[in-house]
Image (cartoon, rainbow, N blue to C red; front, side, top):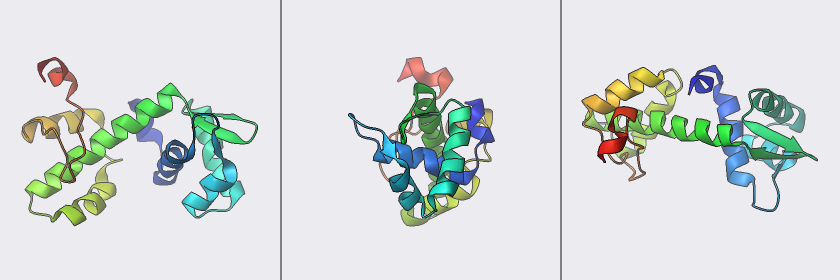
Length: 143
């Protein structure tokens, strides 16, 4: 997803906080998002405003919710992250270090690079922690 490449790490963290904190009847409150991000409310609001402008978050009455586009962006990020984790695991990193190493590069990887890494890794089904890796676009019909 092209929008993923435009996000900063803090904006991505804010998007993940919205996903984690929203509940079916209500969105995620700004104060809770700020606490989760260890930021003051105005700084968290700045990130949420950018996410709203990108169509990733919808805000209403002080509550934030993921939009379908925001959910798709997070799924794409998870794919990037988990493929990177799998690469680091193959290089001999312990499972506990693969996540840290993947966070150093996952936002820098473009979609085509992730597809090629996934292919070179033999289209792994899970990351080192057992979380599922969505299939490559070219491989989606073959799993």
